[in-house]
Image (cartoon, rainbow, N blue to C red; front, side, top):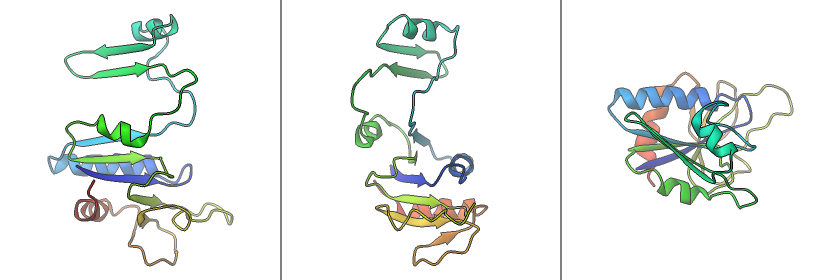
Length: 164
């Protein structure tokens, strides 16, 4: 499995880039997995659904299953966040794993950079393992640089340079 992180500041285009990479890899018949880091409480089940009612009633683990998909919700009150290494082990059948966030972890990363104001500096000088930059702005670096719309080139770079 090839593993690559997509990092950047808020609203830099991380999710859009991942969406476009998923579509590209799917067109090549590759199985794509993703891991997304969330900074705050978040909900994946909506109020009124059975899974929501189970969780709100106090269930510590809830599994939702159908013939199309399944998901597990585990309440982790006052516990340490799961490590990226642990989460990667939960991905079972993907050819490529795209990780959004987890900036400080030690996996290879591609930074999405958009200069929206004068205080907005690229992250690659402070982060470990940034292997490429995706930007339409001018920056000086020895790292490979791709334009935001060059999804096929970014995908080929991932296929050629990113191994677990």
